[in-house]
Image 1: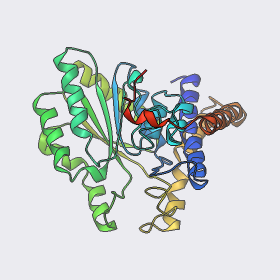
Image 2 (image 1 turned 90 degrees about the vertical axis):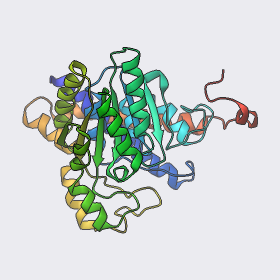
Image 3 (image 1 turned 180 degrees about the vertical axis):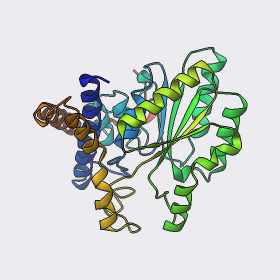
Image 4 (image 1 turned 120 degrees about the horizontal axis):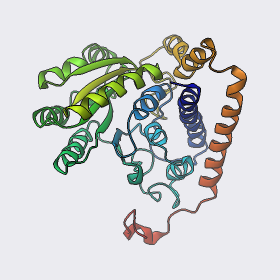
Length: 321
């Protein structure tokens, strides 16, 4: 990758990081209601994987979806307005944090039901193959989705019908709603869940955006050349709790553990790589940081000044004009 490619990856990850930090701040100020699940620490997975596909390919995500939506290129103003529940939001204020959809960019949504979107990913891949469209599907989910029956049904059908879908498990070690013991067990056996279905499996360091991009580029080429699913386990770590209802380190992690993991911050790792290889200097990154800060500030201003949906919007379709 050249200098501009690397800088683009860094900018995308930084945008997600600053957007999420500002979202947490707005939640504390009661500007955002409902649930809010932050992606801080996992940015390299979304950015690296989505950088490996084309604009016609599909992306589908779970409830921790802000990062994937931004990595797909959605305007941060529209995303922030959606979090604020405003009429100018991506889904006109009707979706909120967990249900972002940008159909124009083939970002087919975030879904609140754990693992509930895996069959939808398989369906998207089936439609693409049935209509002889040269599209693949990237499906992001956490390891907590793996015990669900519909996840395995989705894997089974994708393998049986040789569908062009790449299942990307963002393994952040602590599956939602499970005790530490169960979370550790899932963490240790993630790739084993796909093998009984005959799906090829790969594993990657999800804190290294370059490693993620390299692997997903390779898998995408394979799937395009010979359709069939693939399962990628991206080992990662979220620095915040499960949601804004959770303490920063959660009830199941120590502060020391989180601080140790922060030493492998994906932003820091990429910055160190660029500087060490004389591709960029720290001074080169300052304009990017200023640009991103201004972009996020503009998104908050846009969301704050936008109107709430009128009452009659209750009876309108989200895409009604």
